[in-house]
Length: 150
Image (tube, rainbow, N blue to C red; front, side, top):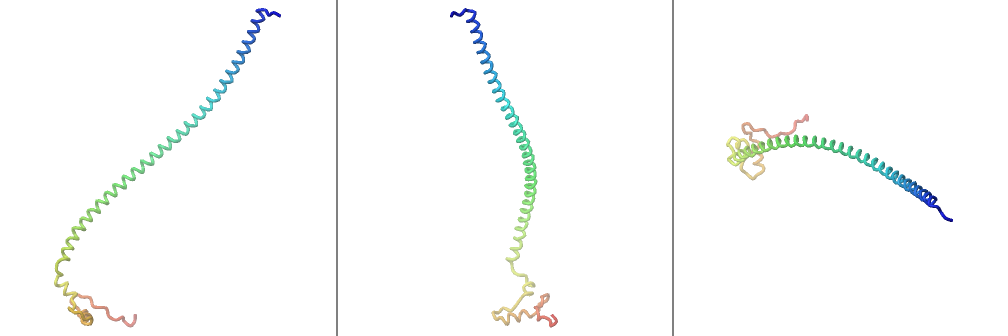
């Protein structure tokens, strides 16, 4: 059985045609697979973009809140600075006044004030109490017995 070159060429054409069809089919399947992968990648990218947009909006909101907190903190610090300055002025005045009071108290008791509360110079309790019964001018009288109606 001999094959003619025409039959051999026809057979070659058929084989090459089948190979081309198979190759095209494989390439088509590969292209469809890659297309599906690209669609998934695009969907994932869009989801990531939405996530990034939300994160950016949250960041902007957070920065706005932080700005408000910063302004309030500055306001509170300014108020505290003013109060601290007033407190320092008051303490300085108190120290100055306290020095005058300390100087006054370190001196002798004025005569009229000493006489107002004077008592006998004794260690006898009865004599000491008796001295309290003597009313000095301007002194408050000692408490007496309670009145019977009360």
